[in-house]
Length: 262
Image (cartoon, rainbow, N blue to C red; front, side, top):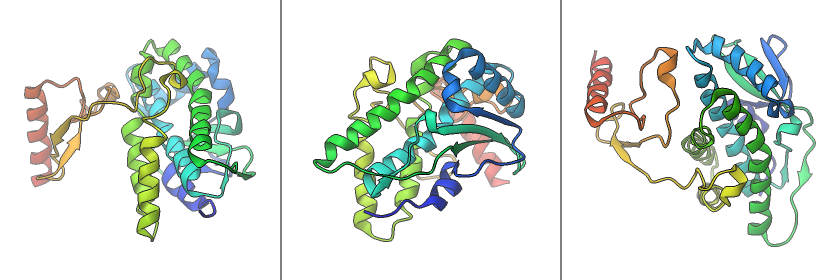
């Protein structure tokens, strides 16, 4: 076990201790259970990402919580103390300082609390279930405003959360620590009761469908569990979108390979 690496949270997970003074939009995350408040945020985010409908702002915003989920898994499994990453302790900012709209999670308080003593698996799961339950009302508010199914919104998180957990694991020097974090991912996602998400099925418990990776020939990549609606920003469908037919996916594969070979 070890101390929290704040530079990892900031650099990789968009979780910061100080607000950006030039952010174009800021809101208290705990207010986002209110449909009017979440609508205002999504409308501004829609403008920034040039979305043709508010729906894509909804999926993108839902997806952004993947980093907070990864941070929770990291702290729950690897650190001696924890930060409160519930919406009640976060402000959300839209910052365009790097030339593109970035969603930031700003801690209201960076006070660290010691984890409970006793049997580790039990309190680890309780901590993650509490986090998912505090996020669920925001997901429901997004669903109410956009009309998107709750399952589609939660479905934006799993692959991204896993990606960031893998990224964080690679930052540890010792192999046993890398393995410890990766093993924790399955326990703290797929073994969580589906009621924590307001769903009948756990969104992390999805069938893996593997595809040829056009960006790394000879390798494979996974199909997304739900559509992120990126095509509503004018970029077309993702190669890994579950909406694509086999023929359309093959055409997209060729498009990507042609672009990379030029």
